[in-house]
Amino acid sequence: CPPCGPELKEMDRVANTLTEQGIRIIPLAQDGADVRKLQQFYAKHGIEVLPFAHDPGSRAMRAFSLQVLPSTVFIDAEG
Image (tube, rainbow, N blue to C red; front, side, top):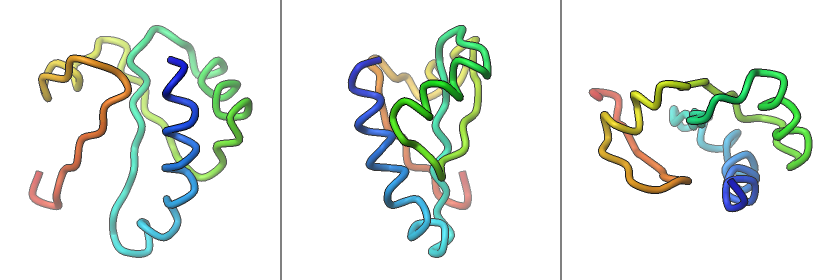
C-alpha cells in the first residue's frame, strides 16, 4: 500500500503524545503478510513506536464498512 507508509510514519511521529493522553493508535494489517513482512515494512518506513495487529480475514474492515486503504477509524473508550 504505497500511501500506507507515509501515513503510518506520521502516526508514529505523534503516537507518544497521544499515548500520554490515553489515545492509542493500532494499525491493522489487512493483507496476508506474515509478521516478518510487517516488521520489514515498519523498518523500511522508519516506524518505531506503533504496534501493529494482523487482521488477515479483514473482519475489522468489514465491521467498519471501510472501502479503501488506508483508512482511519476513531473509537472512543466506550467503543
